[in-house]
Length: 222
Length: 259
Image (cartoon, rainbow over all chains, first blue to last red; front, side):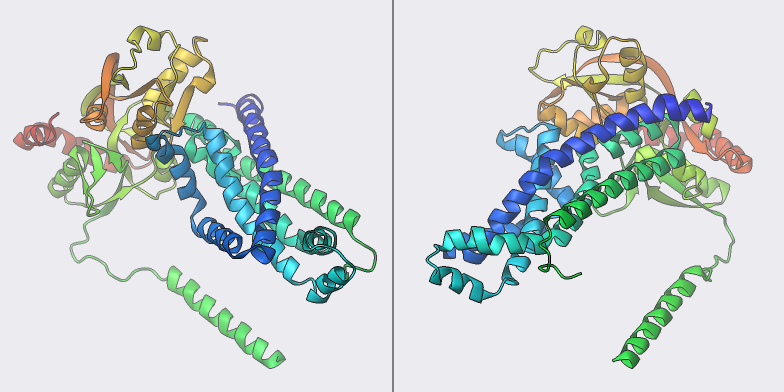
């Protein structure tokens, strides 16, 4: 088959379809993963004993469980106990669990870097613990956690490719289908790599812009 | 501090160098008989033709066939399970020397590799969940959600005869990495029907609440795939195959694997 015809009429339409699914996976996972990550980090740092232990268990489990295995359990295992997710839902749940566990660790580290004295000072000014966490600790901690969270975000873009093993036809899945059908492996996978590179580059530029925008002059050192 | 860093870096560099040189030196263990060694690529989940026993040994009709041929023709074989949807590129890249694992001879594959003489005939089998009430007519009309292993002739058949013919939307064909998970997903009731080669399908559904509702007479021939340039190996395999098929061992094997 003519290379140009293969690229323009078969490969690109398939990969663009796959890219849309990949972006959907990321768009659903990233915000929930971040919010859940914040909640877990706060719970683990300032919660009562029970909450601390629950958050610890969550993080230990999802950091330790290989994502691929988690996806297999969610997709192929859960139907045997009567819960049948669609492939997309199973992928999103798996990604959120993994993403939030890692995010919570970055945020927890950043929260611990906020000096204890600030919390005491907030108390002295009459703030409740809750107010102090929301108004004093988190604004500083989240800014400090941006490099870690952005790393995790870029990992998410790349590990979203695992969804193809549970039949989600995202970018890697669509590439595999085309490559298998037309026996064009090298061309297909090089182009897919460029697609991922493009997505990651755009994401990196976006994150840098956010980091700059939210930076407080004089607060974050260059 | 700086000196320490320097020492660590030099050390790391030396270790890496050692590893690299270790990788590039050719293995010195040459067999005295100088029998050629061919690596045979198989689908490790394709009973009864090729599969891996729980203890890790490759078994199956095709595996035992190639071992027999190797003995007769005086070469050694190493059986290498490989992901099916990447098995032809692995052959072309020289990771394996042949695919002897119930591979159907198709025109598309023939453009990439050479095939030996055919040694077995199969059709495509369609299977549903026992009480689901789906029919073969619904299948042929394209109104079912169908599961298949990626890169198999079953998946190609559905693409060609149902999707490309406009009977079925493309998303109703769900493709998987290997066949056991296709069967699992039918049991999970995400799929209405699954399609696969007749003989391995029989093995795959044995003892499960699944029934065959029909067979598509594709009349496919299995052959051994070999790189285009390896014409000598192709001739050897063809000779070995005809020798095997004329030997009583062929019937013994067929009986053993219930073919």
